[in-house]
Figure 1 (tube, rainbow, N blue to C red):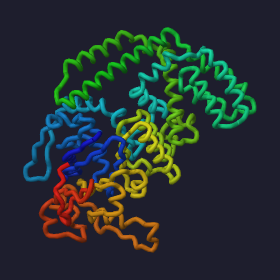
Figure 2: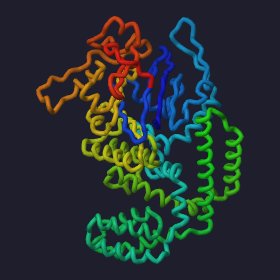
Figure 3: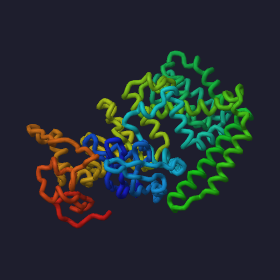
Figure 4: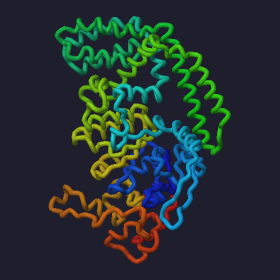
Length: 502
């Protein structure tokens, strides 16, 4: 298991009372597996995603209990020391006393996981994008944080005057006259390989695209772009400083992972690395001086810009250069969603949490994005937690399905098994509400009622007020999770298989 969640409880402390949004959630995700998480609005799907990444807004929310193991590291280590809870007499409220130093330490440890470890596509992209920075600036930041050492290494080892550069330029001009996009892309890739900087391929392609009538006129601009790869001594010094800072950050992340894996604090080692990082920044303070700052940053900024364009191409944005230079308020909802997806995929994470990733997209773009996620899973081995209402999307891409209702996982099964043999009445109700091609005359059914108020959840099984098979025991006792087939578990009193303990 790359992710193993056990007995996760997340509550929200409101003036009306304590909202038990997650109340004992347990499931796991294997390496390279796609797990679908389905349920009605208000069942706790997004709260599960935010709990895994520790992005729950505090106040009013708090992860109360449980274990989240990511590659053996407990992401909730130290949770019990972050807050003190005191019930308010004669009310349903609880007063929370927060220990902010410990909360900050817990958030610092999560920097070792977020990005290259766990990345997330948010349901609402406007809440995750900063309106005052360009799209390129925001994706570039993610690229530098998680792939910065490799990017800087390419710039330092570039060969702009190599023997293969001039033939590659002439071949690019020749191919551009043919006005064939695929061959032009191949010629641009050859130029990128000749210079040793992969982003040069993207830059050359967009420079010569559409210039088939007079490609020679673009050669001076291309030579100027290649000339920028010849770094000055000051630029090289700046890039080495940035690489050293990223190496220190990488060592800090390793320490954080060791802390969460061993359950033991490495305070002294972290302090030494923090002192080293501060000294390195102080020693090279002149890089931030006006007049020097823009010059030394230009090669890295150009490189990350064209890598951003490449990432936007990957999510099928038609005019990626223009979008990279633009700002969030200039884009439609679907475009913003694709930018958010590009940012999440830029780090090539080991686990991708996709919270309704295709909600704002039209049908053709949905298919392209799902194909892109499948490609990432195949190429990198990324595991995916896909949160959606669309059971058709789940059937298309998921290996297993977790059905959630009112903060509980009520059924887990392989996708084919669940669709052919749903056991829980809630799962049966969800599948009965969608049309089927093999039964065109079938009458669609709905589940009566709505998701309960989680301040005062129903006793016993939380689904019993809406369940057509409810029995007296359902109202009194919460059902255990039982194993009803290979990898098929269900929490319902209708079934009496062996109790599943994980």
